Length: 240
Image (tube, rainbow, N blue to C red):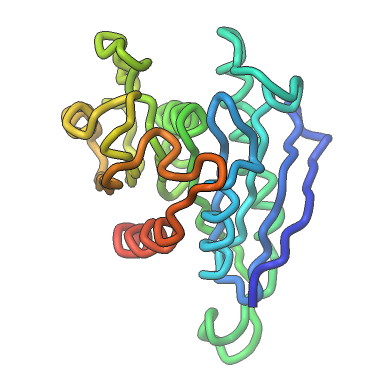
């Protein structure tokens, strides 16, 4: 059965956490925080289908609107938003931990013979474009905040400006990282990304999505229905 989805807010945090939680029918105790790109929000089709796919696999998924998007409903983040946005991602991790801690896990998952409870859940960070970049910068500063990172269309540089590489933090990124990137992404060609990934001292893997641009094939009414399951399968192998 599909996971249930509910609106979520944690207003005691500063900045607050707002978004949607996918609750799996059979939780494994694992969690995933998903954040959006600079021009979007957590209702982006790509994030919704990935949230669904991971929840069906037992993950509790929090799609979290970044603080700049909570403050204004449209437009990109400003030059001064990045620090607060990273704080918002950190607060989203804390909020997801609260959801997961003490949540019952069936015996078939826990392996104890009766329902048990997760005391130390594994939480992963995932983000599209700007959200992924801020997540990677946060983990470069605090590597123990998450067990792994999924970067969807990492914005290596602005379109047509390959000299403006966004790689300064990559040598400090010690979290295992899975990249998902379109072969027609104007924010970085596959060959450019392969070179940048070499700067990361942690384990990495790159999934190249043939023919896809920065939206990974989820723009407007178009979508690559097989992609969420492909990402989940590669994720499972990479982080097992």
